[in-house]
Image 1 (cartoon, rainbow, N blue to C red):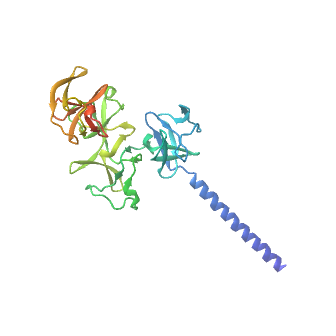
Image 2: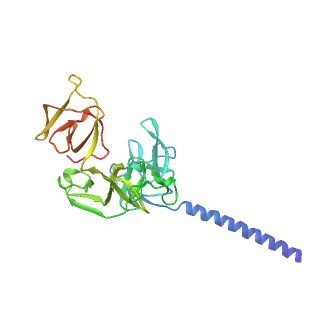
Image 3: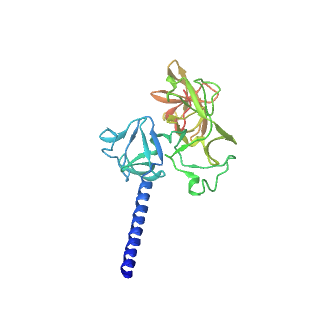
Length: 306
């Protein structure tokens, strides 16, 4: 009888142990399936990709665009885990990009995120280091060296006040966006507070970290503008004369003049207006003289207003 009791006790302990193990597994699976937050799609919406960075033909709850699964502008979905830097099959070429895992085998490009966790959001468009409030690169951020580099395509929450002013063309902040995303229809310009260190602007991203404003493409899903920007001159578009001609505004159009700029290829020029009439034209800061777009080799990430 005693032996029988011992055997029964051992079986009970083994059963309890197995039950505990399965409970741990179930708890881990439940935790893995828990959302880390939400992301909202910006203008144009977002295609849904698989784990290999290829567009899906369908995805639960998504519509379709050109026979590919597509989430509409303003759609909000859960995401799981940290942003993932992975292959992106784009225009028949393989690239690398940041994606957010939205579950059920779906991923969306970080570039398409307007809002992260329903908070003020910066869209990083150039690989960016994290700095302290004095503009010095951090060796660690949030406890890790790897966090000191934020890859392009990542959505980051900013900390601080969101300022606003009427849509005007004077006394502009260094960086801003239009409340409608479009200058002609906007009645306000908005911008998160930034910190200026040695002439460079930084956004506060919390936990003692700051990121350069020059590396941000969108804020809260709206295209970021700049009061002024730098362009790099290329070879003259006019091959016959080899000169850079001055253009002037003429009503709603542009007029070519006989005057020329004394530019050289590779020269950097500060501009404060960008105007489009078929091609682009860029006003040299402090003048009424415009550079013809084809004379420019490198354009800024943030365009000035027109």
